[in-house]
Image 1: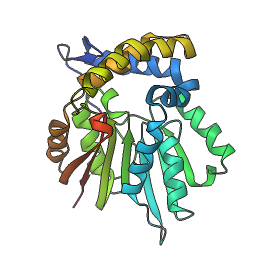
Image 2: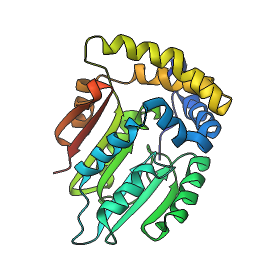
Image 3: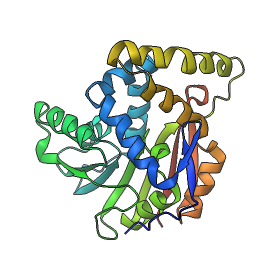
Image 4: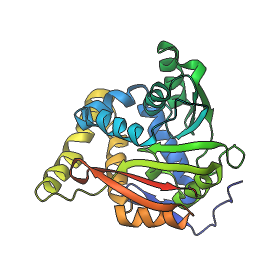
Length: 255
């Protein structure tokens, strides 16, 4: 079980500092507010690029079509990544979709039924820091745009390592640091001025999107996150930048 936080432990929530034990509830509230239009907002905020990023992620996962392939998609409640993996792997592939937010999972279940994918998917409400699965349960693990919302990232990485089989691989698609001169200035202006405004126009809420933008800036730089993955026990930890560094796909092997 996840240990209770010490009284003096704090972490960031956007640009604010909050007691560590409060962050998860605050993050949950953000996603309760945005669940119904989460995927629409992803299209609007990224200009559709998130679809290409997720396609690249699934290409790297490369689920086997030759035999049973057990995949865990964490913080994937609406099913966007899970549907792609199930389709890529075909009938032998089973995807467990885990999310701490019940509203996001309900969206995913509804979407899975419409796509006739319910037989290939299992939806589980649980915490990335305390996965309810035995050791060595999965062939691969993905988390897309979710790990930066986890209060204890190191704990989530440790759990990812625990539930992967030997030879299994961890993948994380997450916003990163723009490394293209000129694009960084444009990206900052777009993020802080337009994204909250788009969120308010579409969902009636600007505050959740202000938090999401701020949380991106607080996430470790790509090299530092690669080292955190290695510290969790993964071998050959590496990353690939996409779209000028707006996002990166990190990975590591359990060997």
